[in-house]
Length: 403
Ligand code: SF4
Image (cartoon, rainbow, N blue to C red; front, side):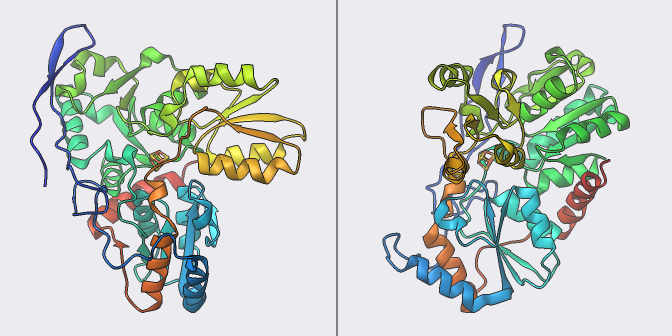
């Protein structure tokens, strides 16, 4: 069910105003009904165990034991501790998808993460392996900011402006299978936060411009901070405005066409958070994820992916102090892990900053998924159709072949 929304008016780059075409969004309660255009508000069938059931840990352990090698549980770094304790491996989304592909004997891959990650795991694993997402409402607000229809419309705008044939799409791993397939179909590649620079360098060898989807911050930070481009080389395509809110001339002049998407978790950190922690914690090193805003990244001491953040803290000397700008579940786990080594680790912001959709995967959902599988009921399977899969795989393979 969708609701019609009125057209809005917003100022354009030149200070005038133009019509804003809002994307029709489903207004659904989380956990009820289904919206095929979005990952939010998807019904969860079956009887979930009560969150207060004192036997939840034992039930998860017993179901996993019963399944044995048939099940492989993946835990993204941003998952809750109550879930992570049952993960066979932990990591970022791409590492987890590859770990799953390396376990062909596992019939069931239970992905404790969000929807686009489960799609990537389905794309990279064998046809006989079934990927399960314990709660279908675990989507990603960033991935939802670029729909297949919007991106197809954007390509039409680029074609109209005469720049499409010189533009190479580069899509962040944090995107739907549809967007990855679009990228593969148009000669582009996928990137992660670890290899974004290599992906952009490759793309600029293939064409003159990059359409970077869907995280404007990762695109801008990589282009400007890592590759020496200027902020003026970047324009932002807003899918809610006619022609993306850009003129044909702006599109022709730009090197980086950034999609107007962001991570709602990393987007919360501000320059004030950085200045404030430097006052509160003497000698602190500020270490942030490249999904943070450009001014935050520019003010930080170190910038990198979650795997980079972990490696940097592992190598940090005893007595050092660190403020970390990434999801709170991971920061808390790192603070506990390194406390005994005398490393002080604090969260960059003063306010709580969990990823709410990641947190949809809780122990009751994990127990429900594992017990269902142990009883022979395949639930919440994530399956990408074969055409989408083949084009998405093409884009992923280009990434794997990056120098
Ligand atoms: S942390 Fe950000 S990018 Fe990652 S799943 Fe949550 S909303 Fe999406």
